[in-house]
Image 1 (cartoon, rainbow, N blue to C red):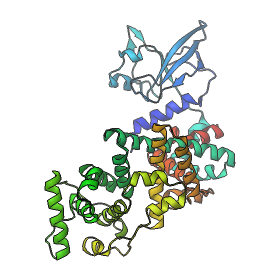
Image 2: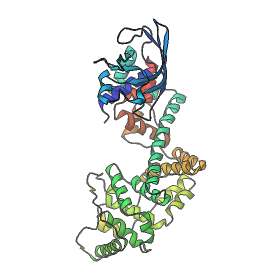
Image 3: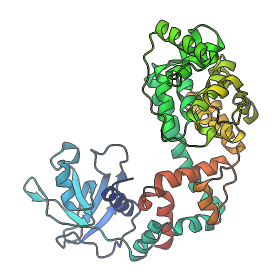
Image 4: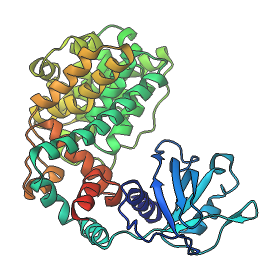
Length: 424
């Protein structure tokens, strides 16, 4: 959850950026009348830089216009607490915009011009309704299609950029090896919440190349994955388990693998989400798809991607390591989620780094080919009157809910800003 002070700071920043304040009769904290000629250009990338650059503020009594940067804080004292008043990056700040002036700040023996900003009453009232969570679904549902689609496309663009950046980060961490990248990304996509990081830890402890050179048998892949995951730490109660254990320990010694310490507690309790079952499914896919990266890149439509995850796991492994699971494969619903969480971000990242626009277009086509997801996040918006037509728009709703609503940063949310502008 975001810090409340940072949440309010983002609200104030949004008020400034969208001019959602009363411009007439504007005066500094010391009573000096001013006019905001230009709010400046927002900085979203570096917290050491001013919030806005290239702004201009006109002093009405003298007619002088000052050009420079804007610093945003909830209280004037926060800038002092940050210890950056004398920072070179902030030396050209011409105005400190705050909600409250609790102290007078000075720099170079001069008081820092401070503007106590007050939102328009209608904006403040709308913001309060947004914070309660009751306004957003009905507002989104009531928008015209063209405006709603534009808004959700912008939100979805941010989500896909973030998810593809995660793939690129994995790629850079494995010495720019696309085979290892696809393997780790696939493992992560199979998990929910804490399972994601656990499965990534498993993948990094057992590099993909080891699965290919271990011994060349399907049983080696299963033994390595189950052993590294810690699912072979049990008494050898029958011949099959004993055989898998012996195979793993021999491979572990030969490859110089270190045992992992992964806690698989706290995951989903549904049998089909049990970690041993997920590892068995992953092993089955990797055994069948000996050239996994090439297979993914060769798929051209939704059905061909679904075929990658359409597997039938060996009953022996289910019986001994996931006996509570009735399924013998990956459900269509989970396959669709794997396409959303693995295939689409992977194709996008691959296309970006290799300059292959057709892969990025293929990824977007997959979004539109997949049905909209139906669960808590999307049901809330459906209750307000908007039913996502496909996965592209349902993922935008997930992004909106998880990145904005869950943290309560309504004042910094594209939908929230649109609502405040609409009712201002």
